[in-house]
Length: 178
Length: 90
Image 1 (cartoon, rainbow over the protein chains, first blue to last red):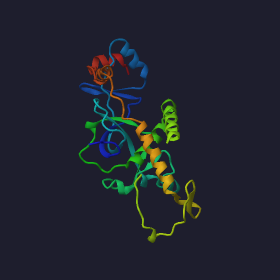
Image 2 (image 1 turned 90 degrees about the vertical axis):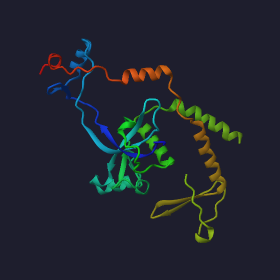
Image 3 (image 1 turned 180 degrees about the vertical axis):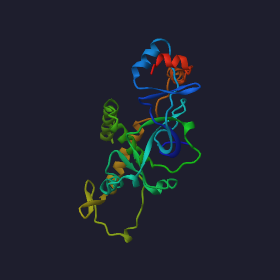
Image 4 (image 1 turned 60 degrees about the horizontal axis):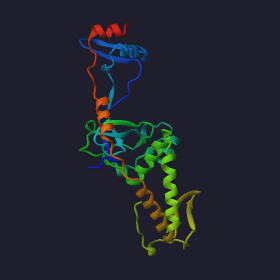
């Protein structure tokens, strides 16, 4: 199954941030507020620790197929449209006018109980095993997925000029030859 | 793009000419844009060309695969209380 564009339940972690909560065997966790102490520890040969990281079970939109052979996908989190308190902002999202919240047409997502929008700023890499892939909650059509890819590239400031310009030149050449 | 065909008897649309676009608005908002079938075919061809020009992602090299699994596999984590409290004194 091509996972691109599908929405699945996932166990999605929050990125660890200070204070880092370190697991200590048989003791309460230790909180460390600075990266500096980790760097010092790595300097004396201790670079692997177990952190206590919060995860949330949530639906996500997968924007790639499984990245072989790594077994990962890129995915984005969702925002429930009903939780946007400002009616004008909510209307803007539903009109596809907010570039950071990509509105999911409910007809394409029968498995989602409420209206949702994809948060284009929440790009994360997840193992396929962290997704409930046997139960798609719905999917984007190829055109919607293309728009979402454009928005993710734009939000993250990815410089695609070197990729796009040669392709544009090729396109021009081919259209002149037709 | 998903195509939908509507019989001309069931709608009233103005005639279109190649190279011409007619915007249908309601309360100042664009609702529908009409273009000539010749232009539609040309846009479709451009869309196909763009799709063809961006091939599937390249396969990672053996070295890249090895590096990924080497660096993405957790090592032996330090969980011992004495070591951790020494490294991270409170």
